[in-house]
Image (cartoon, rainbow, N blue to C red; front, top):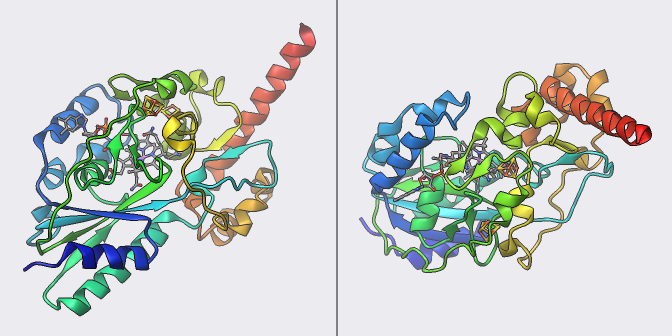
Length: 312
Ligand code: B12
Ligand code: SF4
Ligand code: SF4
């Protein structure tokens, strides 16, 4: 079975994606070795899910019956919008509606349109939810290159993009990886506040994104002191990247509940109220208690630095 790539790409743009590329579903072993050596260094910290299903990652037929191709899509979340209160920072990716919903809905709409054209076509939609080398497939399908900040960088859109995929049971005409590479300026490595980003990958245990979202308990002391006012995720290694300096930005991304977000409110809310108010957002992943703890850390650090300045 074969579906023409231009038809697929037309559908992708029509449902609202910013770019689309297609590759076969095979996986280069280099990904598995890179992942295994990353795990051996314990760079996955407590994200034990990264140690599981490595066989599935390297053979997508274990994920989707008869997997032949991967249709990768990019959805930009690049914006200048910010919450009204400026004494804390939420990473850009969490300002809008939870990307798991946004990207998956669009992918499912795409699959439905493809099935209308080719009734035997089938597949499954994924976004940050399965054992799948997402940046590898985006790169393989010509959508961008992987930078020293470990993000997929699109020459057209920059790196503030989500990656999603349809793993499908048909063939298409495949794209080639780009010749272009990262500028190698090392600004990302120099800008990383915790030195989590190294020349041999990200040590998640030190990454602010991990510490403020994924880590179950509080923030480690060595990270606390350099975290600045970040209470959810971190954009430092992308904000500094020249590939993000002159790419299109979107407006109308930020949700009203994030725009008006007040961390103080978290203290007064029950978990249930939090879940109801932020049901559409990515903040649910960390939960009320974790974010309130992150906020408490920012306040304590600010107080400590004010006291230090007063003593000088
Ligand atoms: C675990 C994880 C994290 C961890 C670890 C980050 C990391 N870079 O690995 C933590 C919690 C720290 C994290 C943070 C963030 N994440 Co995250 N995360 C993931 C996840 C689930 C897996 C990433 C992974 O496989 N890591 C494993 C290591 C080994 O990867 P690596 O060192 O870069 O090596 C890979 C390649 O470079 C390649 N490789 C390396 N060497 C070689 C050699 C050869 C020969 C070959 C062939 C290949 C190869 O192999 C590896 C696997 O493909 C993906 C979703 C997914 N399923 O892919 C999202 C994902 C990477 N995250 C995403 C986002 C948005 C973020 C944050 C920006 C969120 C934020 N603002 O706080 C930060 C950015 C941090 C950063 N600079 O990467 C997006 C990135 C989009 C993009 N443009 O690239 C993804 C793709 C989710 C999505 N679907 O959109 N994340
Ligand atoms: S997200 Fe922040 S802490 Fe994590 S590697 Fe990038 S700059 Fe460093
Ligand atoms: S900041 Fe420089 S080294 Fe880092 S990803 Fe961007 S271009 Fe590459």
